[in-house]
Length: 215
Image (cartoon, rainbow, N blue to C red; front, side):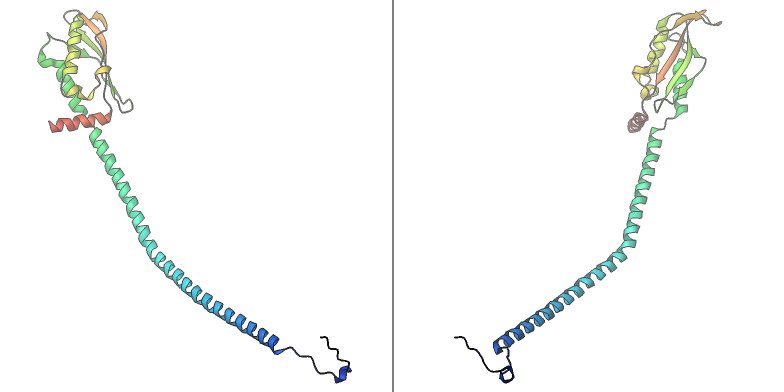
């Protein structure tokens, strides 16, 4: 039912919101303020906790940095010393005693003074490094024109148990050359040849050395 107030405005009562509307608005404001306060309380407490953990972890990290750097320095130094030690071992293991090899070679050439099996002499001796595989080159003469004595000499080189252990058998000169005058030697003819011998890689010298020490 619609009611119309026909009284003049001066005589009309003031229009007011109902108590239900005021109550609803007040409840909404209270709930909003409580929610805002609760959110702020929880957020600030959680923020303080997280910030405290962050500061604590940064402090521990800063304390560990010098120790980590010291540890890295020790590891790097240990690697460097290990590398140097390995280099020294490789050099010591791959070293060849040239005086020993030359003395043994001279013993083969002299053959204890026995010339019936072979009688050779040399004009020069050249040893080239050859990237870790030294090569011996000698200009040589084998007395008498018989190539069999030259073959005997090469066999004696290969059959020497100590001298030829560091050489490659497939890089030894095969019997050959040319017959020339022996420059006052007797008989007057000799075989002129070039002796070439290639050594094994340095790592195999080390193995031969170790094998010899075990024997």
